[in-house]
Length: 453
Ligand SMILES: Cc1ncc(COP(=O)(O)O)c(C=O)c1O
Image: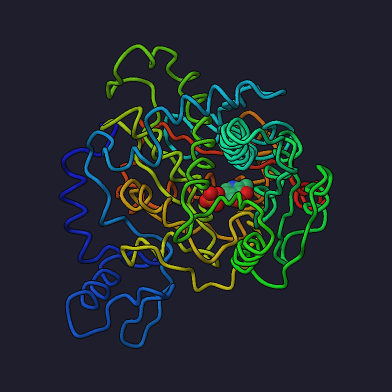
């Protein structure tokens, strides 16, 4: 069976009572008993804000959970189409495909890895070369700016027409970033003729900051986390009359992050164009050579929402099983799955996967991810460097340049494939065809070289 069918729903009902699987190597019987008791009885339930579950005399780290709120295999819900759906994708594709340097990124096969994991195939959508910026984020921030500028120009043109005024002064856009989104905003600002101010938290390397400056943007260092940088960008924008181009949403600020996510959906068209060129003319059926599973690394959740939303819209009930992969230190999406609503990570945010280091998730993205993801997990820090090396050396199949956050989804797949219980839980088997995203290449070349060489 390609996809989760009737059994999935029933299983989710049953896992709701004992849905959390603990660390590897533990006996599931004992684990389930512990959680089931905490779920139903006087033992504390999962503390919704903690990474740990407290059972008598035990504190366990949660690194895997099925999603009890995952939707049954159905067509894409109408309510989600207003976020990712309708004409928005077509408009973004028409716009982005016209930018200088546009070319679909490669869909690589990792045949050696697939065979060693006992699955049919692994496809790696390799974003390391996207627009020469090194990450998929090139699609989002720059597209957000384009939408704002277009709207602004339309408004300016209509008011100038009425009042006979000239062009407004150069607008300024701003954002917070772990590195890649800021680069996209700086590049987009340069392309569309605005000024840019990018706020970077302390952990972002100076090489990544320089890459942002290279497009003429001003970089402001924030002494704190990504989320402090988000708050500072919003505050300074209000004071100065700038426009925030954020990849994360927050109450009262949803429209631009929606455009940013729609920009990311271009990756899905490109994947489907390669796998099923006829998909645009026929309805998908379960036996087409489409992915059965997709592993997506999560920061604020915008990427995951774009991937899940577009695949769901396009493939309906035949959409793949979606697994979200995060660092343990920044696991806001997993926490949200446990709580059933957007929740923050309580980790220390220290992770080699710098692009995924954030505390709060995007509530707009959660609307799709909360229903559309089937499982959430964390990836072990010490698995990243060896996997980057294996990818570069061609040990997985076609070689590719995978950055620290870039290989996180792939690491999630490997972890699941090596664990019988998890494999069974998401029906990963020898007929499975898995899609992952290498979301960044060597975005900090010095660091990359130190890890890979
Ligand atoms: C390389 C890379 N991969 C994945 C992500 C996750 O994207 P999102 O924050 O939309 O979940 C990011 C976010 O910055 C990133 O830089």
